[in-house]
Amino acid sequence: MRRPGARDDSMTLTSGSADALKTLFGKDFVDGRSADAAGYGADSNRYYKAQPGAVVFPRTVQQVQELVKLANRQNLALVPSGGRTGLSGAASATAGEVVVAFDRMTRIGEVNMTDRLVECEAGVVTQQLHEAAARAGLHYPVDFASSGSSRIGGNIATNAGGIKVTRYGLTRDWVAGLEVVTGRGDVLQLNRGLIKNATGYDLRQLFIGSEGTLGFITSALMRLTVPPKNLQVMLLAFKDIDALMAASAQFRRELPVTAFEFFCQNGLQKVLEKSAREAPFDTAYPFYGLLEFEAPYESVLEDAMDLFESLSDSGQVADAVLAQSGRQAADLWFLRESLSETLSHFMPYKNDLSVQLADVPAFMARIDACVAQHYPDFCVVWFGHIGDGNLHLNILKPADLAAAEFKARCERVNADIFACVQAFGGSISAEHGVGLQKKNFLGYSRSAEEIAMMRAVKAAFDPNGIMNPGKVLPD
Ligand SMILES: Cc1cc2nc3c(=O)[nH]c(=O)nc-3n(C[C@H](O)[C@H](O)[C@H](O)COP(=O)(O)OP(=O)(O)OC[C@H]3O[C@@H](n4cnc5c(N)ncnc54)[C@H](O)[C@@H]3O)c2cc1C
Image (tube, rainbow, N blue to C red; front, side, top):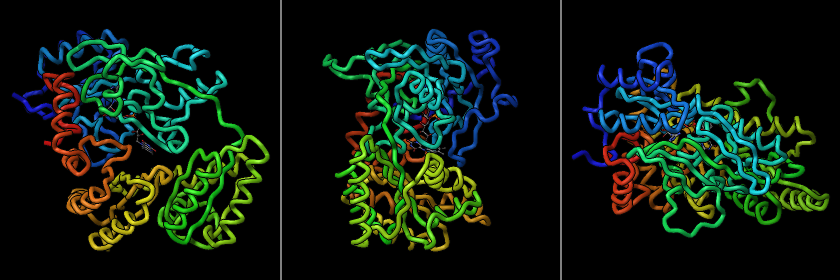
Protein backbone atom coordinates (compact mmCIF):
# COMPACT_ATOMS: atom_id res chain seq x y z
CA MET A 1 0.00 0.00 0.00
CA ARG A 2 1.18 3.52 -0.82
CA ARG A 3 2.23 5.64 2.19
CA PRO A 4 -0.23 8.57 2.59
CA GLY A 5 1.20 11.59 0.76
CA ALA A 6 3.84 9.68 -1.22
CA ARG A 7 4.28 10.00 -4.94
CA ASP A 8 3.81 6.83 -6.99
CA ASP A 9 5.43 6.31 -10.40
CA SER A 10 2.43 4.30 -11.60
CA MET A 11 0.29 7.48 -11.57
CA THR A 12 1.03 8.40 -15.15
CA LEU A 13 -1.42 9.64 -17.72
CA THR A 14 -2.26 6.93 -20.27
CA SER A 15 -3.86 7.61 -23.63
CA GLY A 16 -7.05 6.08 -22.22
CA SER A 17 -7.17 8.42 -19.24
CA ALA A 18 -6.27 11.40 -21.48
CA ASP A 19 -9.29 10.51 -23.66
CA ALA A 20 -11.51 10.34 -20.57
CA LEU A 21 -10.28 13.80 -19.53
CA LYS A 22 -10.97 15.16 -23.04
CA THR A 23 -14.51 13.80 -22.85
CA LEU A 24 -15.04 15.46 -19.48
CA PHE A 25 -13.42 18.79 -20.32
CA GLY A 26 -13.76 19.23 -24.09
CA LYS A 27 -11.93 22.42 -25.11
CA ASP A 28 -10.94 22.95 -21.47
CA PHE A 29 -8.43 20.08 -21.78
CA VAL A 30 -4.88 20.97 -22.84
CA ASP A 31 -2.13 18.44 -23.58
CA GLY A 32 0.83 18.94 -21.22
CA ARG A 33 3.28 19.13 -24.13
CA SER A 34 1.41 21.84 -26.04
CA ALA A 35 2.43 25.50 -26.04
CA ASP A 36 -0.85 26.39 -24.27
CA ALA A 37 0.29 24.36 -21.26
CA ALA A 38 3.48 26.42 -20.86
CA GLY A 39 3.49 28.21 -17.54
CA TYR A 40 1.16 25.65 -15.92
CA GLY A 41 2.91 23.07 -13.80
CA ALA A 42 5.41 25.46 -12.19
CA ASP A 43 4.96 28.03 -9.46
CA SER A 44 7.25 30.95 -8.56
CA ASN A 45 9.90 28.63 -7.12
CA ARG A 46 12.20 28.34 -10.09
CA TYR A 47 14.05 25.22 -8.95
CA TYR A 48 11.47 22.67 -10.15
CA LYS A 49 11.00 21.89 -13.81
CA ALA A 50 7.40 21.76 -15.03
CA GLN A 51 6.39 18.51 -16.74
CA PRO A 52 2.58 18.35 -16.59
CA GLY A 53 0.83 15.47 -18.32
CA ALA A 54 -2.20 17.66 -19.04
CA VAL A 55 -3.89 20.84 -17.86
CA VAL A 56 -7.65 21.01 -17.30
CA PHE A 57 -9.80 24.06 -16.54
CA PRO A 58 -12.97 23.14 -14.61
CA ARG A 59 -15.94 25.51 -14.72
CA THR A 60 -18.18 23.98 -12.03
CA VAL A 61 -17.96 22.07 -8.76
CA GLN A 62 -19.73 19.14 -10.47
CA GLN A 63 -16.95 18.97 -13.03
CA VAL A 64 -14.33 18.95 -10.26
CA GLN A 65 -16.22 16.14 -8.54
CA GLU A 66 -16.37 14.11 -11.77
CA LEU A 67 -12.63 14.69 -12.25
CA VAL A 68 -11.80 13.43 -8.75
CA LYS A 69 -13.92 10.32 -9.26
CA LEU A 70 -12.18 9.69 -12.60
CA ALA A 71 -8.75 10.18 -11.01
CA ASN A 72 -9.60 7.65 -8.29
CA ARG A 73 -10.75 5.12 -10.87
CA GLN A 74 -7.79 5.62 -13.17
CA ASN A 75 -5.04 6.32 -10.60
CA LEU A 76 -4.31 9.89 -11.79
CA ALA A 77 -2.29 12.43 -9.80
CA LEU A 78 -3.99 15.87 -9.60
CA VAL A 79 -2.19 19.16 -8.84
CA PRO A 80 -4.46 22.11 -7.94
CA SER A 81 -3.21 25.33 -9.45
CA GLY A 82 -4.19 28.91 -8.56
CA GLY A 83 -2.11 31.91 -9.60
CA ARG A 84 1.15 29.87 -9.30
CA THR A 85 2.75 32.58 -7.19
CA GLY A 86 3.57 30.08 -4.44
CA LEU A 87 7.22 29.88 -3.46
CA SER A 88 7.63 26.30 -2.25
CA GLY A 89 6.98 24.25 -5.39
CA ALA A 90 3.58 23.17 -4.02
CA ALA A 91 1.74 23.92 -7.29
CA SER A 92 4.38 22.33 -9.47
CA ALA A 93 3.75 19.26 -11.62
CA THR A 94 7.13 17.67 -12.21
CA ALA A 95 6.15 14.09 -13.06
CA GLY A 96 3.34 14.12 -15.61
CA GLU A 97 0.51 15.01 -13.20
CA VAL A 98 -2.77 16.58 -14.31
CA VAL A 99 -2.78 20.27 -13.42
CA VAL A 100 -6.21 21.53 -12.39
CA ALA A 101 -6.23 25.27 -13.02
CA PHE A 102 -9.00 27.47 -11.61
CA ASP A 103 -8.70 30.26 -14.19
CA ARG A 104 -12.34 29.69 -15.31
CA MET A 105 -13.95 29.65 -11.87
CA THR A 106 -13.76 33.37 -11.09
CA ARG A 107 -17.28 34.40 -10.07
CA ILE A 108 -17.75 36.78 -7.14
CA GLY A 109 -21.20 37.00 -5.58
CA GLU A 110 -23.09 40.00 -4.18
CA VAL A 111 -21.68 41.31 -0.90
CA ASN A 112 -23.93 40.36 2.01
CA MET A 113 -23.77 43.67 3.91
CA THR A 114 -25.41 42.35 7.08
CA ASP A 115 -22.89 39.56 7.65
CA ARG A 116 -20.14 41.30 5.65
CA LEU A 117 -19.57 38.17 3.56
CA VAL A 118 -18.87 37.59 -0.10
CA GLU A 119 -18.76 34.29 -1.97
CA CYS A 120 -15.75 33.80 -4.25
CA GLU A 121 -15.00 30.93 -6.57
CA ALA A 122 -11.51 29.51 -6.11
CA GLY A 123 -10.07 31.27 -9.17
CA VAL A 124 -10.91 34.83 -8.05
CA VAL A 125 -7.70 36.87 -8.06
CA THR A 126 -6.90 38.41 -4.65
CA GLN A 127 -6.92 41.93 -6.06
CA GLN A 128 -10.41 41.37 -7.53
CA LEU A 129 -11.64 40.58 -4.03
CA HIS A 130 -10.00 43.80 -2.76
CA GLU A 131 -11.81 45.74 -5.48
CA ALA A 132 -15.17 44.04 -4.90
CA ALA A 133 -14.93 44.81 -1.17
CA ALA A 134 -14.00 48.44 -1.87
CA ARG A 135 -16.98 48.86 -4.25
CA ALA A 136 -19.23 47.83 -1.36
CA GLY A 137 -17.49 50.32 0.97
CA LEU A 138 -15.77 47.46 2.79
CA HIS A 139 -12.25 46.05 3.01
CA TYR A 140 -10.54 42.68 2.50
CA PRO A 141 -7.36 43.13 4.50
CA VAL A 142 -5.09 40.22 3.50
CA ASP A 143 -2.57 41.72 1.09
CA PHE A 144 0.88 40.97 -0.33
CA ALA A 145 3.07 41.74 -3.32
CA SER A 146 1.55 38.96 -5.47
CA SER A 147 -2.09 40.03 -4.92
CA GLY A 148 -2.42 40.90 -8.60
CA SER A 149 -1.88 37.24 -9.63
CA SER A 150 -2.55 34.94 -6.67
CA ARG A 151 -6.04 33.41 -6.39
CA ILE A 152 -8.34 32.87 -3.42
CA GLY A 153 -8.08 29.06 -3.62
CA GLY A 154 -4.27 29.31 -3.51
CA ASN A 155 -4.36 31.87 -0.68
CA ILE A 156 -6.55 29.56 1.39
CA ALA A 157 -4.56 26.44 0.52
CA THR A 158 -1.37 28.18 1.77
CA ASN A 159 -3.05 30.22 4.56
CA ALA A 160 -1.29 33.25 3.08
CA GLY A 161 -0.18 36.00 5.43
CA GLY A 162 1.37 39.12 3.98
CA ILE A 163 1.90 42.67 5.09
CA LYS A 164 -1.12 43.33 7.34
CA VAL A 165 -1.01 40.29 9.62
CA THR A 166 0.02 42.38 12.64
CA ARG A 167 -3.41 44.02 12.60
CA TYR A 168 -5.68 41.66 10.66
CA GLY A 169 -4.27 38.14 10.97
CA LEU A 170 -3.87 35.46 8.26
CA THR A 171 -6.17 34.28 5.46
CA ARG A 172 -7.51 31.72 7.97
CA ASP A 173 -9.09 34.55 9.96
CA TRP A 174 -11.20 35.64 6.96
CA VAL A 175 -12.57 32.32 5.73
CA ALA A 176 -16.15 32.03 6.99
CA GLY A 177 -17.12 29.05 4.86
CA LEU A 178 -15.69 26.66 2.30
CA GLU A 179 -17.04 24.44 -0.44
CA VAL A 180 -14.56 21.62 -1.08
CA VAL A 181 -14.31 18.42 -3.11
CA THR A 182 -12.35 15.90 -1.08
CA GLY A 183 -9.87 13.43 -2.55
CA ARG A 184 -12.67 10.85 -2.15
CA GLY A 185 -14.92 12.88 -4.42
CA ASP A 186 -17.34 14.12 -1.72
CA VAL A 187 -18.58 17.73 -1.90
CA LEU A 188 -18.58 19.31 1.57
CA GLN A 189 -20.07 22.66 2.64
CA LEU A 190 -17.98 23.70 5.65
CA ASN A 191 -19.23 26.23 8.24
CA ARG A 192 -21.56 28.15 5.82
CA GLY A 193 -20.59 31.64 6.99
CA LEU A 194 -21.46 31.18 10.66
CA ILE A 195 -19.61 33.11 13.37
CA LYS A 196 -20.48 30.56 16.02
CA ASN A 197 -20.62 26.86 15.28
CA ALA A 198 -19.67 24.47 18.08
CA THR A 199 -20.55 21.23 16.30
CA GLY A 200 -17.41 19.18 16.56
CA TYR A 201 -14.27 19.25 14.45
CA ASP A 202 -13.97 22.31 12.20
CA LEU A 203 -12.97 20.60 8.94
CA ARG A 204 -12.72 24.01 7.24
CA GLN A 205 -9.56 24.66 9.24
CA LEU A 206 -7.94 21.45 7.96
CA PHE A 207 -8.30 22.60 4.36
CA ILE A 208 -6.77 26.00 5.17
CA GLY A 209 -3.02 25.56 4.67
CA SER A 210 -3.36 22.00 3.29
CA GLU A 211 -1.60 22.91 0.00
CA GLY A 212 -4.00 20.94 -2.15
CA THR A 213 -3.21 17.62 -0.48
CA LEU A 214 -6.69 16.87 0.93
CA GLY A 215 -8.94 18.02 -1.90
CA PHE A 216 -10.00 21.01 -3.98
CA ILE A 217 -11.35 24.27 -2.63
CA THR A 218 -13.98 25.25 -5.18
CA SER A 219 -15.56 28.25 -3.46
CA ALA A 220 -15.19 30.27 -0.26
CA LEU A 221 -17.28 32.66 1.81
CA MET A 222 -14.83 35.43 2.67
CA ARG A 223 -15.38 37.82 5.56
CA LEU A 224 -14.90 41.56 5.02
CA THR A 225 -14.35 44.44 7.43
CA VAL A 226 -14.59 48.23 7.54
CA PRO A 227 -11.78 50.09 5.76
CA PRO A 228 -9.04 51.70 7.86
CA LYS A 229 -9.11 55.51 8.11
CA ASN A 230 -6.29 57.92 7.34
CA LEU A 231 -3.35 55.52 7.02
CA GLN A 232 0.06 57.04 7.73
CA VAL A 233 3.30 55.56 6.40
CA MET A 234 6.74 56.09 7.83
CA LEU A 235 10.17 54.68 6.99
CA LEU A 236 12.56 54.41 9.91
CA ALA A 237 16.30 53.67 9.93
CA PHE A 238 17.96 51.63 12.68
CA LYS A 239 21.56 50.98 13.67
CA ASP A 240 20.83 47.44 14.83
CA ILE A 241 18.08 44.86 15.05
CA ASP A 242 17.63 45.28 18.83
CA ALA A 243 16.70 48.93 18.33
CA LEU A 244 14.30 47.98 15.52
CA MET A 245 12.56 45.30 17.60
CA ALA A 246 12.28 47.57 20.65
CA ALA A 247 10.77 50.37 18.54
CA SER A 248 8.40 47.91 16.85
CA ALA A 249 7.12 46.71 20.23
CA GLN A 250 6.58 50.29 21.39
CA PHE A 251 4.71 51.28 18.22
CA ARG A 252 2.45 48.25 18.50
CA ARG A 253 1.75 49.10 22.18
CA GLU A 254 0.98 52.77 21.61
CA LEU A 255 -0.40 53.15 18.05
CA PRO A 256 -3.06 51.40 15.93
CA VAL A 257 -0.36 49.76 13.77
CA THR A 258 -1.55 48.09 10.54
CA ALA A 259 1.90 46.94 9.31
CA PHE A 260 5.48 46.80 10.51
CA GLU A 261 7.85 45.44 7.85
CA PHE A 262 11.62 45.40 7.64
CA PHE A 263 14.48 45.08 5.18
CA CYS A 264 18.24 45.32 5.29
CA GLN A 265 20.62 47.64 3.43
CA ASN A 266 21.62 44.89 0.91
CA GLY A 267 17.98 44.56 -0.11
CA LEU A 268 17.39 48.31 -0.34
CA GLN A 269 20.50 48.65 -2.48
CA LYS A 270 19.24 46.04 -4.96
CA VAL A 271 15.82 47.73 -5.22
CA LEU A 272 17.38 51.17 -5.76
CA GLU A 273 19.73 49.83 -8.45
CA LYS A 274 16.93 48.01 -10.29
CA SER A 275 14.40 50.87 -10.11
CA ALA A 276 16.88 53.75 -10.49
CA ARG A 277 15.22 55.50 -7.51
CA GLU A 278 16.91 57.73 -4.95
CA ALA A 279 17.86 56.45 -1.51
CA PRO A 280 15.38 57.50 1.19
CA PHE A 281 18.17 58.72 3.53
CA ASP A 282 21.56 60.39 2.99
CA THR A 283 23.26 57.73 5.12
CA ALA A 284 23.00 53.95 4.72
CA TYR A 285 21.83 52.02 7.84
CA PRO A 286 21.90 48.26 8.44
CA PHE A 287 18.10 47.98 8.90
CA TYR A 288 14.93 49.82 7.92
CA GLY A 289 11.43 49.48 9.35
CA LEU A 290 8.33 50.41 7.38
CA LEU A 291 5.58 51.45 9.75
CA GLU A 292 1.96 51.95 8.72
CA PHE A 293 -0.66 53.04 11.25
CA GLU A 294 -4.21 54.27 11.25
CA ALA A 295 -4.80 57.83 12.47
CA PRO A 296 -8.59 58.25 12.54
CA TYR A 297 -8.28 61.22 14.94
CA GLU A 298 -5.85 64.15 15.10
CA SER A 299 -4.84 63.07 18.59
CA VAL A 300 -3.41 59.75 17.25
CA LEU A 301 -1.13 61.68 14.91
CA GLU A 302 -0.01 63.94 17.77
CA ASP A 303 0.73 60.89 19.97
CA ALA A 304 2.69 59.35 17.09
CA MET A 305 4.80 62.50 16.64
CA ASP A 306 5.57 62.59 20.38
CA LEU A 307 6.62 58.95 20.24
CA PHE A 308 8.92 59.46 17.22
CA GLU A 309 10.52 62.46 18.89
CA SER A 310 11.29 60.54 22.05
CA LEU A 311 12.65 57.54 20.08
CA SER A 312 14.83 59.86 17.98
CA ASP A 313 16.07 61.79 21.04
CA SER A 314 17.08 58.54 22.74
CA GLY A 315 18.93 57.44 19.58
CA GLN A 316 16.73 54.36 19.17
CA VAL A 317 15.57 55.56 15.75
CA ALA A 318 18.53 56.77 13.66
CA ASP A 319 16.48 58.58 11.01
CA ALA A 320 12.89 58.70 9.79
CA VAL A 321 10.67 60.03 7.03
CA LEU A 322 6.87 60.41 7.24
CA ALA A 323 4.98 60.32 3.95
CA GLN A 324 3.23 63.63 3.31
CA SER A 325 0.94 62.37 0.53
CA GLY A 326 -0.54 59.20 -0.92
CA ARG A 327 2.14 59.30 -3.60
CA GLN A 328 4.96 59.44 -1.03
CA ALA A 329 3.34 56.64 0.95
CA ALA A 330 3.25 54.49 -2.21
CA ASP A 331 6.92 55.32 -2.87
CA LEU A 332 7.91 54.15 0.61
CA TRP A 333 5.84 50.96 0.26
CA PHE A 334 7.51 50.36 -3.12
CA LEU A 335 10.87 49.92 -1.38
CA ARG A 336 9.48 46.99 0.61
CA GLU A 337 6.94 45.58 -1.84
CA SER A 338 9.30 45.34 -4.82
CA LEU A 339 11.94 43.36 -2.92
CA SER A 340 10.64 39.88 -3.87
CA GLU A 341 10.35 40.78 -7.53
CA THR A 342 13.77 42.50 -7.56
CA LEU A 343 15.50 39.55 -5.91
CA SER A 344 13.81 37.02 -8.21
CA HIS A 345 16.34 38.03 -10.90
CA PHE A 346 19.08 36.55 -8.68
CA MET A 347 17.32 33.14 -8.39
CA PRO A 348 17.30 33.44 -4.59
CA TYR A 349 17.20 30.40 -2.34
CA LYS A 350 14.47 31.47 0.08
CA ASN A 351 13.97 30.56 3.67
CA ASP A 352 10.78 31.80 5.32
CA LEU A 353 11.35 31.49 9.06
CA SER A 354 9.48 32.57 12.16
CA VAL A 355 10.17 32.73 15.88
CA GLN A 356 8.50 34.52 18.76
CA LEU A 357 9.03 38.28 18.62
CA ALA A 358 11.09 38.34 21.81
CA ASP A 359 13.56 35.87 20.26
CA VAL A 360 14.15 37.72 16.98
CA PRO A 361 17.46 39.50 17.83
CA ALA A 362 19.15 36.41 19.31
CA PHE A 363 17.79 34.22 16.52
CA MET A 364 19.02 36.54 13.77
CA ALA A 365 22.47 36.73 15.37
CA ARG A 366 22.70 32.91 15.39
CA ILE A 367 21.53 32.61 11.78
CA ASP A 368 23.87 35.42 10.67
CA ALA A 369 26.82 33.55 12.23
CA CYS A 370 25.75 30.31 10.51
CA VAL A 371 25.34 32.07 7.16
CA ALA A 372 28.69 33.88 7.46
CA GLN A 373 30.39 30.55 8.12
CA HIS A 374 28.75 28.66 5.24
CA TYR A 375 28.13 31.36 2.65
CA PRO A 376 31.06 33.78 2.92
CA ASP A 377 30.88 34.28 -0.86
CA PHE A 378 27.07 34.70 -1.18
CA CYS A 379 25.00 37.88 -0.92
CA VAL A 380 22.43 37.49 1.86
CA VAL A 381 19.29 39.64 2.05
CA TRP A 382 16.99 39.77 5.07
CA PHE A 383 13.51 41.22 4.82
CA GLY A 384 10.06 40.35 5.99
CA HIS A 385 7.06 40.79 8.21
CA ILE A 386 9.04 41.40 11.37
CA GLY A 387 5.97 42.66 13.23
CA ASP A 388 4.88 38.98 13.17
CA GLY A 389 8.33 37.46 13.88
CA ASN A 390 8.47 36.36 10.20
CA LEU A 391 11.89 36.69 8.57
CA HIS A 392 12.63 35.99 4.90
CA LEU A 393 16.25 34.91 4.49
CA ASN A 394 17.27 35.17 0.82
CA ILE A 395 20.57 33.78 -0.43
CA LEU A 396 21.29 35.19 -3.90
CA LYS A 397 22.81 32.93 -6.54
CA PRO A 398 26.16 34.19 -7.80
CA ALA A 399 25.90 34.69 -11.60
CA ASP A 400 28.71 32.23 -12.35
CA LEU A 401 27.40 29.35 -10.21
CA ALA A 402 25.18 26.67 -11.80
CA ALA A 403 21.63 26.61 -10.36
CA ALA A 404 21.81 22.92 -9.34
CA GLU A 405 25.11 23.39 -7.50
CA PHE A 406 23.84 26.52 -5.76
CA LYS A 407 20.65 24.72 -4.63
CA ALA A 408 22.67 21.73 -3.36
CA ARG A 409 24.94 24.01 -1.32
CA CYS A 410 21.97 25.85 0.17
CA GLU A 411 20.25 22.59 1.07
CA ARG A 412 23.34 21.35 2.90
CA VAL A 413 23.28 24.49 5.05
CA ASN A 414 19.53 24.13 5.69
CA ALA A 415 20.27 21.47 8.28
CA ASP A 416 22.21 24.00 10.39
CA ILE A 417 19.71 26.80 9.82
CA PHE A 418 16.73 24.61 10.66
CA ALA A 419 18.46 23.17 13.73
CA CYS A 420 18.72 26.77 14.93
CA VAL A 421 15.01 27.34 14.14
CA GLN A 422 14.21 24.19 16.09
CA ALA A 423 16.30 25.32 19.06
CA PHE A 424 14.20 28.52 19.21
CA GLY A 425 10.92 26.58 18.82
CA GLY A 426 10.33 28.38 15.52
CA SER A 427 8.86 27.45 12.15
CA ILE A 428 10.80 26.51 9.00
CA SER A 429 7.93 27.89 6.93
CA ALA A 430 6.09 30.86 8.35
CA GLU A 431 3.75 31.50 5.41
CA HIS A 432 5.12 30.13 2.12
CA GLY A 433 4.13 26.55 2.86
CA VAL A 434 6.05 23.29 2.63
CA GLY A 435 5.44 22.06 -0.91
CA LEU A 436 8.39 20.22 -2.42
CA GLN A 437 11.09 22.48 -1.08
CA LYS A 438 10.59 21.98 2.66
CA LYS A 439 8.92 18.58 2.93
CA ASN A 440 12.02 16.68 3.95
CA PHE A 441 12.78 19.26 6.63
CA LEU A 442 9.30 19.17 8.20
CA GLY A 443 10.66 17.28 11.20
CA TYR A 444 12.48 20.41 12.36
CA SER A 445 9.14 22.08 13.12
CA ARG A 446 6.70 19.21 13.63
CA SER A 447 7.15 16.11 15.81
CA ALA A 448 7.07 12.55 14.46
CA GLU A 449 3.70 12.10 16.19
CA GLU A 450 2.29 15.19 14.49
CA ILE A 451 3.51 14.03 11.08
CA ALA A 452 1.92 10.61 11.68
CA MET A 453 -1.39 12.38 12.50
CA MET A 454 -1.05 14.43 9.30
CA ARG A 455 -0.65 11.21 7.28
CA ALA A 456 -3.78 9.83 8.95
CA VAL A 457 -5.75 13.00 8.07
CA LYS A 458 -4.47 12.79 4.50
CA ALA A 459 -5.56 9.14 4.26
CA ALA A 460 -9.04 10.01 5.57
CA PHE A 461 -9.68 12.70 2.94
CA ASP A 462 -7.67 11.20 0.08
CA PRO A 463 -7.34 7.40 0.59
CA ASN A 464 -5.89 6.75 -2.87
CA GLY A 465 -3.34 9.58 -2.64
CA ILE A 466 -4.43 11.33 -5.85
CA MET A 467 -4.26 14.88 -4.42
CA ASN A 468 -0.96 16.66 -4.99
CA PRO A 469 1.15 13.57 -4.25
CA GLY A 470 4.71 14.05 -3.05
CA LYS A 471 4.00 17.45 -1.44
CA VAL A 472 4.11 18.55 2.21
CA LEU A 473 4.67 15.13 3.85
CA PRO A 474 8.27 13.87 4.01
CA ASP A 475 9.41 11.13 1.60
C1 LIG B 1 6.31 38.55 -5.17
C2 LIG B 1 5.68 37.58 -4.21
C3 LIG B 1 5.35 38.00 -2.93
C4 LIG B 1 4.73 37.12 -2.03
N1 LIG B 1 4.42 37.57 -0.78
C5 LIG B 1 3.79 36.75 0.07
C6 LIG B 1 3.45 37.21 1.38
O1 LIG B 1 3.76 38.33 1.77
N2 LIG B 1 2.80 36.36 2.19
C7 LIG B 1 2.45 35.08 1.81
O2 LIG B 1 1.84 34.35 2.59
N3 LIG B 1 2.80 34.62 0.59
C8 LIG B 1 3.45 35.41 -0.28
N4 LIG B 1 3.79 34.94 -1.51
C9 LIG B 1 3.49 33.54 -1.85
C10 LIG B 1 2.16 33.35 -2.64
O3 LIG B 1 1.84 34.50 -3.36
C11 LIG B 1 1.00 32.99 -1.74
O4 LIG B 1 1.26 31.77 -1.11
C12 LIG B 1 -0.34 32.87 -2.49
O5 LIG B 1 -1.38 32.80 -1.57
C13 LIG B 1 -0.41 31.68 -3.41
O6 LIG B 1 -1.60 31.79 -4.18
P1 LIG B 1 -1.66 31.20 -5.65
O7 LIG B 1 -3.06 31.35 -6.14
O8 LIG B 1 -0.62 31.77 -6.49
O9 LIG B 1 -1.39 29.67 -5.33
P2 LIG B 1 -0.52 28.61 -6.16
O10 LIG B 1 0.91 28.96 -6.12
O11 LIG B 1 -1.14 28.36 -7.48
O12 LIG B 1 -0.77 27.32 -5.24
C14 LIG B 1 -0.34 27.28 -3.91
C15 LIG B 1 -0.83 25.98 -3.26
O13 LIG B 1 -2.24 25.99 -3.19
C16 LIG B 1 -2.78 24.86 -3.87
N5 LIG B 1 -4.03 25.30 -4.48
C17 LIG B 1 -4.21 26.30 -5.38
N6 LIG B 1 -5.52 26.41 -5.67
C18 LIG B 1 -6.18 25.47 -4.96
C19 LIG B 1 -7.54 25.06 -4.86
N7 LIG B 1 -8.51 25.68 -5.54
N8 LIG B 1 -7.84 24.04 -4.04
C20 LIG B 1 -6.87 23.40 -3.33
N9 LIG B 1 -5.57 23.74 -3.39
C21 LIG B 1 -5.23 24.76 -4.19
C22 LIG B 1 -1.69 24.44 -4.86
O14 LIG B 1 -1.78 23.08 -5.20
C23 LIG B 1 -0.45 24.73 -4.04
O15 LIG B 1 -0.25 23.69 -3.13
C24 LIG B 1 4.45 35.79 -2.42
C25 LIG B 1 4.79 35.36 -3.70
C26 LIG B 1 5.41 36.24 -4.59
C27 LIG B 1 5.76 35.74 -5.96
